[in-house]
Length: 279
Length: 315
Image 1 (tube, rainbow over the protein chains, first blue to last red):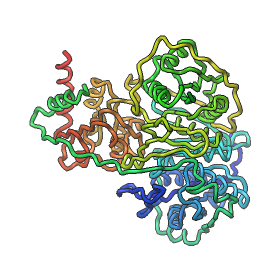
Image 2: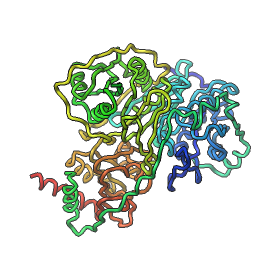
Image 3: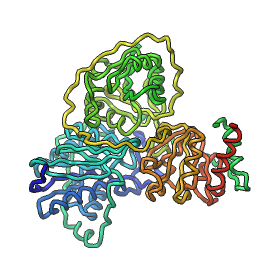
Image 4: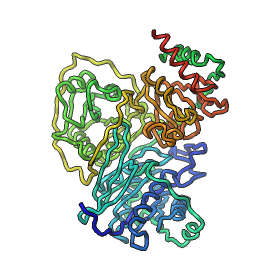
């Protein structure tokens, strides 16, 4: 197999505006939804953006016709995730926002994101790759990437710790390494594909002054449900296929006994385990 | 009684604890029916029967060559035939992806990270890295639920159970899919899987590159070895051992934390453990705030002494 002349890639990176996991996080309101004050670009999405930028740069970057579009769905403040992505290096941004999206579950989120990707394709041609982080740091269900792949009928490569795109006999193929518990595997998939990358995939770049200034000139497209042709009844809390009936903070773990090693702590540890019937 | 379809990868006998837990849970909600991702031989069929399965769906051919797409297509096809009241899977990354895609194929809601499923299909799960517990319901379609390991006590086998009906599911087109082109096995440790282990001994920065005492204690307790991100990033142990927000979330009966400060990243992965024991030199380490039993001391003297004491008691 020989590499032929490379063609530019059209890459969409999904980015999410999430509450900073460094602080306490709370579920509020009748829908038991997450309080989104103190939000940031999800740390895990920075690896997805970096992977996209590296793939595009390997093919000559923006001037060679490659596209790296950061797509965020969420309320007004979620545009900050798009802006941060532009500062880091994304070429363009899309903010999908609509009041009717509030409280969407994975099914509704993947429906809206799939429609947004299709809407992008109408203006800029077929998307080759949708890249996501390994999980969001808030909902943590990890359902959305797989559901998006299913809805868009994309080949799905999740948890890539290494990623490359090669042109094989005129067709672009994505290759990836996945590190499992008991084995490491290499996989390949035809484009278009959905890829999620782990925090081992690369070292994300930081926005520099030049990037921050340049970001101000980059386009951010705002899309509503009407723009992407999604019926508001299919998304949001009312359109969700799952519902949260109740939520409660887990009682904080109370501090137990703390001893200082007097030379017998190992023995005391075993005595404790025996008393708890753990050995 | 309505059926509950349990998706299993059925790798080998004896049936793993995680599979027995799912079958036990299915039996509390309805009649367990299995969708096995590979061909089922008579010995496996017997084992599934002894844990309550009354019917087993198997694919008409090999599903292995592509990632989750083919398994999701198989599970959705089995569900369309069976029309169960609910579908249960494990909670591994792969299980969750299969659940996600099956949910879209069936137009059914998916709930992950379940720790309990009531007979009325109300699902209890822990969210926000274990800091909240919520009760959820699927409102649309057949509930697809992924259940965390160690959520139920598996029922003992009933060797007298009748042979289940075996139903072949024709292979359907899974759509575009990633193909596995190579696989290299890692060193087989003989230790349990981290996500399913009843006991985990985990080491962090304080192990200073030497995981020997952690591994020794884990092996004596029949447990798995875990690690903080600091330890895996330093290359002291493989990344798959990482417990925490960007690693695995675990809920073992016993979690022994050695030389780990217990910052929020790590806590997120282990604070739902039943009993937490912490050993750390630094009396101010945050891990002591959540430990049931804490020892301020040197991991290199406390861990070997504990291992020695266990050997002495067993001798």
